[in-house]
Length: 306
Ligand SMILES: *Cc1c(COP(=O)(O)O)cnc(C)c1O
Image 1 (cartoon, protein in one colour):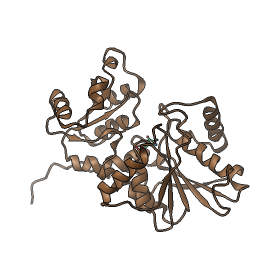
Image 2 (image 1 turned 60 degrees about the vertical axis):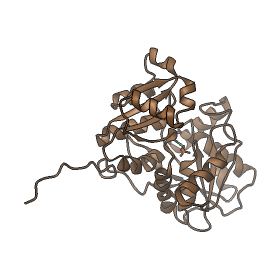
Image 3 (image 1 turned 180 degrees about the vertical axis):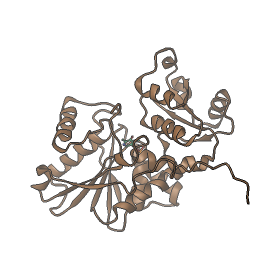
Image 4 (image 1 turned 60 degrees about the horizontal axis):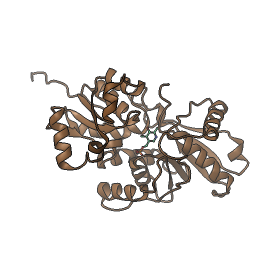
């Protein structure tokens, strides 16, 4: 008999994920009357606590961490920080969140950071200048030393690295040829980079950036080059639907999201998903898609708090 080994938590096995995520057809006249089919790829249903594209991005990273402390970065309302904290709790890995904004240290935690803390994430607040320079080796080394995790496994802000991009190829593979165009909201672009690479020939990925600045084209290209050694798949960006930038909104966008949710019985996440759906509807109204096109919209997450 062999002695019993300590089981290594398997991030994929511990919380049973719902994969492939469901694909649902919506009946929405605004698309239907233009001869378009609209499908929702429900990545928000993958896991109750580790939702959406964050599951696809984080699981390969946590596997690679192999028990080491996971250190990552985010703003005061970061979906990525919450997902990392949840993953750490579910899998028994220590996590540290480096949060932008020294001043936050003196205030009560907002609901997002409170959730991170409740999931066992150690929060470390840094000033904006340090945060901006977090990828520089000297700054990073200082941060890791300060949090007492010199040998930590570091996941970049937003969780987009080569492992995450590879994890997101499964999204494209699951969709296969069920859709002609697949739309996804983009923060750092890691999900789009993997999705586009995973789609079969003839499939097209459309990214809707939720941040302002026009830097995403270069980011997605760099992520694909790092992950695959070259650009992969067919993808493009439409930069018109950021509504002023991250977490910015307008009464028009709010009304759209409210209405979409009511029509389809779907809670519409506002930071990303609402902007992507709004962009799709605008493009449909502009005649950007030929009649007979099947569009899949990736629901990358749920509202918080839900
Ligand atoms: C993080 C997130 C995204 C963006 O993913 P990237 O890979 O950074 O582009 C999209 N939607 C939701 C709901 C998210 O939480």
